Structure formats: structure tokens, C-alpha cells
Length: 418
Image (cartoon, rainbow, N blue to C red; front, side, top):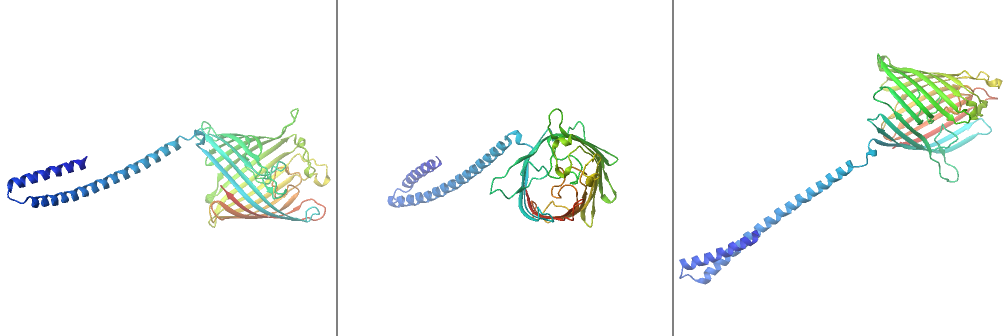
């Protein structure tokens, strides 16, 4: 529309100029006037072209602004869509890890002279919380097998056959704000007790119910735990059950150190119904356990030391070699931690576990069970924030045996967290 108005103005201007020129200069040559008018028209055309070019640039700039506004609108729409994702995705956390292991085992044993194994462990799961994190439900799947509850390892064997994945954890946990310090958990649960691998392997996840309560008084945290764990469902009320009662304190010490002390009573009901024949121990058991842990800093590094002792008061082994084999103890030290790239840690343990001190089906499977004593050395380095490389050496021998038998176990691990 503006262009048409400019052309009309130019035409009217031309007629006006001609009329004025003829009126003012009647004797002037008409051809000269036409040439002058033509020059003026050409000048006007140039101005009009320049104006049109300017109008075109402005329109282009406006189009660009319009495109940017459109992109921003799409981004806002995308953000609003994300906010409209299903509510069950809120407070949902995924976790997992993969470990590759080389293992060398040699022993003064006719059945096991030397053995090399390549193994892996895969674990992954989800945790979901509700009610301002008062209620938590979680599960974890893991490799392993159904005959060794203390291990999630799978050995490279079986003609390239597929490997099994098992339900390793499946639990619900409730910590009500109305009762601070109280937590109730049930299902196939992570271990809720203060313990070491003298009694429980770190890969063992019991099944049953746990109730935990703690309260701080004068900077000392007093805690108590009851666990009702079902090992075997029987008939006629003959379930194999482990009831655990634990009490202890967590207290600050001078120089920033922290101590944990716990006393625990383990009471098996109908343990003999499990049919456990390993180590000639197939009866009920009641164990008293005392544990002390101390954490402190020295030489600019974090340190942990512990002492653990267990006694079985129901040892009635008919084998005279093991009639009083009802005690076990362990102590250890660890320095360093593995949280980020460049971190390292190293540790040492000594264990002495008599035949009937604790069920071999529960404790550290790498150490080998009961009726064993020996040393454990471990070290780990954080290659990245999510990758660690580590090694372990187990030097063990039987407490009671015919002849002298030494076992050597070496492990090298690469482990990724995701």
C-alpha cells in the first residue's frame, strides 16, 4: 500500500510540475521540460527503491524476531510437558554396579590343588520414596545362584550359556515423622544390624522383619534393633527362624573420633530343620556377639578399626574334635576411602572362627566358612569417580585338621557404579 501511495504522489507531482512550467514559461521548449521531468522521476525511483530495501530489511528482522519467539514458545511447551510427566516418576532413583573378577585359588588339598576362575557380579535396582521420604520401597536384582546366599558372583563357564538374575532385595521401609528415630522394614531386606563378616557376608540379604529405634541423649546415640528373620518355611509350625536382639551406642570420642559398640543375641529356632550338614553342625544355636568399631583421622587420612567376638552357647557337637569349638573372633584396620577419582584404601583383617562358632551358611564366603583362621589383605584405587580397581589376598588354614593345609586365594577386581 505504501508503494502505491508513493507512485501516485510522483505522478501528481509530475503533472503539477509540467502545468506550472507551462504556465510560468510559455516560451520554454517542451522537450527540455520532459527531460527535466524524466530526471526527476529517475531520482524519485532511486529513493523509492532505497525505501523499499529498507522496508525489506525491517520485515526480515521482524521475521527473525517472530522465529525466535516461536522457538521460545516451543521450549516453554516442552518444559510444561516435562512437568506433566507421571507422578510416580517423582523421587524414583535407579542404581547399579558391575564387577569383573579374576580369582586364583591354590590349596594343600587333593581335591583342590589349583584353580583359576573369571567371574562377574551384576546388580541393579530402583528406590522410590513417598510422604516426604517417610515411606521407601526398593528392589534390587543381582546375578548369582540359589545355592549360595552369600555370593552374587557368576563364573565364566557352562558352554557360553546364559546367566541367571535373581531377586536380591525387595522391601518396604517406613520411618514416621511422628515417631523420630523409629524405622520398620520388611521383605527381603538389606542387613539392618551392626555387624562384620565374622557372622554375615556383605552380600547376604535376609528375609523377614526389622524394627530399629535410636535416640540421642547427651550427644550419645542409643540404638536398639529387633529382627525376625525366616530362613525356612516349614510345616506344623516348624519354621526355621532367626530372632535377633541388638542394643548399642554411637558416641563421640576425643580428637573427633567416633565409636560404635553393640551387643547382639542371635537365637535360631528349629535350625536343625534346615538340613545343613556342612561342617557336621546340624542343630539349634544361640550366639552372643560383642562388636566395637572406631573411626578417626590420623596423618590426614580416615581410619577404621574394629574388634568382633562371638560365642555359641548351644554347641553339642558329637565329634570330640569339635565338642568345644564354639568361639570366634576377628579384628581389622582400614585406612583411606573411595569416593572420587584418585582416592585409595587399604585394609587388614585377622579371623579365628572355630567349627561351631557361627553358621557357615551366613558368614564370609571368600574366607571359606568356619574351622578356619587366617589373614586378609585388601587394597582399592579409584581410577575415576565411577571405576575402582582392587585386589585381595586370603591366607587361611584349618584350626582342627589332619595334617597341615594352607589355602591361598587371590582376587583382582574392576568395578563400575552407575
